[in-house]
Length: 233
Ligand SMILES: NC(=O)c1ccc[n+]([C@@H]2O[C@H](COP(=O)([O-])OP(=O)(O)OC[C@H]3O[C@@H](n4cnc5c(N)ncnc54)[C@H](OP(=O)(O)O)[C@@H]3O)[C@@H](O)[C@H]2O)c1
Image (tube, rainbow, N blue to C red; front, side, top):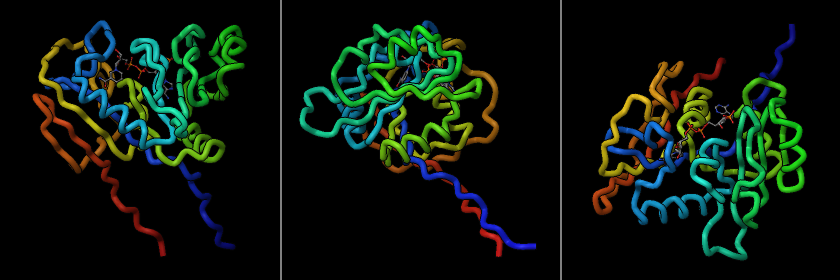
């Protein structure tokens, strides 16, 4: 018998996430209204975090709900972060603002469910990766972003369903959370891990790295703690 090296996990970017949450942990209302409840200061912070990254990634639903353009307002001549969209259904309206706004290249990760009409309409404005699986394989998407686009640091800006998938796949490294002085209530209002439902297969252990009071908001940064695995001798 010969000893064989284990296959290497392909390198992926460092994944940070950024969310505003209410005091009761909601990221939106039950109607999934646009997340506009944090202060201007928090929105400036979002842009600052974006500027430290090579890519900004969002789910299709958030992109549509928040009519995002994923750019950095007022910044020119600097390498803007790649704009990355993930959608299992591929039902992304080609009329969304993000496709009209000039800026960094756009990459879409989707599945075979994407309607051919949408694919044709978006092919000239985005690189589209069609995954053969029923849901986008996020680990593979990250590996492609690293290998093909040189993305070393990526920020996921939601929504909750997508963040839950990142956490379930153990692909998160850090989370920025802004706690806002509001209570929404409502069992149907999404949280950081989507609409309250099943437990994650494994909890994500966090360590508080930064905490700053800004007006009535609390700006925090948490890193994901992973147990070191022992290497076999
Ligand atoms: N407070 C905040 O900071 C904040 C941040 C972001 C969003 N929000 C709010 O959150 C709400 C949207 O939340 P949401 O949970 O519905 O949106 P979401 O996380 O954007 O929805 C999941 C999206 O990701 C796509 N997706 C692709 N691959 C996936 C995978 N492997 N696993 C899971 N999802 C995958 C889904 O595809 P399909 O196209 O097939 O559905 C869907 O479009 C909006 O109201 C928005 O305003 C708040």
